[in-house]
Image (cartoon, rainbow, N blue to C red; front, side):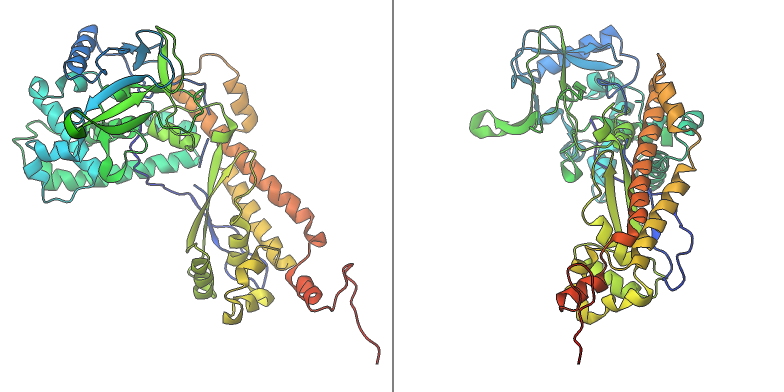
Length: 489
């Protein structure tokens, strides 16, 4: 499961100069989404020892976290790591776990621990505080109340944050690579800060050396195990429940869990996990982690991808250039229409362009004889004009900007889609190589789709109706067939 610590790092492309008379081209940054066999476990690591697993089961049961009946058993699963296996036939909606609040690793647990005093006034991000709790409790060893849980956690997952330099070469040119590097830089800066302010100042709490790799491990555990909706201040690790793995066969948007009150007056808070489908005895129980995540996000958060085109996507980032002579006017128009200096558009394989993308692109490329549309007189109506082609020059400019950017992005990969498809057709690809190949193939397909859309648009430029023709029609000076209407004196 994944902590939602979204820190997107974007590839910045500077397209060639536009046609004479146009302002400096908008800066086009291209960040992404992406594919893999179904049913990959979140934790791609060697399973813990039988003794550790038995001790964990006892710990879970002693706290009543297994819903009192042991209907779901933690076990090693074929795809690697641990999962939850049905101890009997389970109907849809059956409660699998009711994990009491005292077992959660969250901000309240940090405050109640001996770490609480050390971090109390530090105003740490919630994930940083819980990451430090993980490291502190790991340092306590058998004395930690979470010792049986910590003993079964993997040392790493197949998330790209744990890949070697050699493995990262396989995603060269991808948005996933730049996002991964950006995330690691972010975690590094947070580590340097807490290392100086908290870890080195509280050696009694952290008696051994705490390295960046240790901190990255804690970040990766949170990113891969926290349920998607438990974000921000609500961030919490839920032992036992977090063993449930993901399957793309589960397509229901309905949540598989809830936080509810139990006991006298509902004062005892528990995390209740249910099975979203019927499960036969001895089969693994799965849920859907997040229908909206792209393959790039799945690879970064959990270390798996899906063979599903709706997971293949590319995030196009458009930006009004500060060097644009009409920067202030364009920014004002963008903000009036709920957008800003930078806009992000997720383009999914097989789906049409996001509706706001073309108007925003036209705004970025406006210049020359079209600049009158930026005047205050048009301020409230201009977005309506931008929803349709403005002029042939403007429409040609947006095609050129996007196609140049796509060409540049496609040139950064070291393989072709055909080579990727051939690799995917071979048997027994290593899990990380499978992720890499599916991610880069997915990105390239989406980039090619974007390029095809704008190539077709370029071919239709002569047949489009532009602002001036629409305006002349509105005031009755052009007929429906485009002929000029005039009166003889």
